Image (cartoon, rainbow, N blue to C red; front, side, top):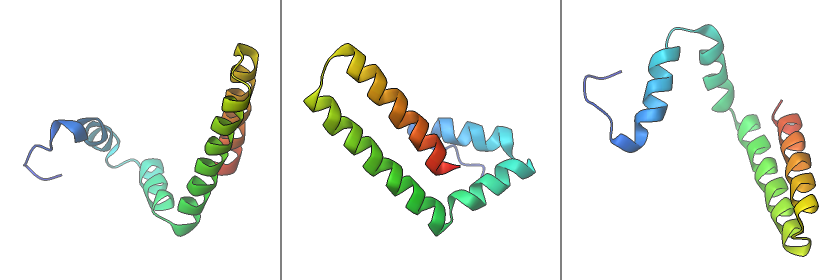
Length: 81
């Protein structure tokens, strides 16, 4: 980390990086996150959430909202891991 303080918008990321500096699992996560394969998985998750949003436009009821959000979250976790 440099001695210069980051803009306030970047503080949360800066604090997490500061707290986790030196941890091997965090460094492995950062390497994995920078890979092309991981970015492709994130893009799939984005399309999944866009599909969920489209379904919510078709069925705006409370039960549909909860069901679609839970399923989209579960599938996103499954895709990313």
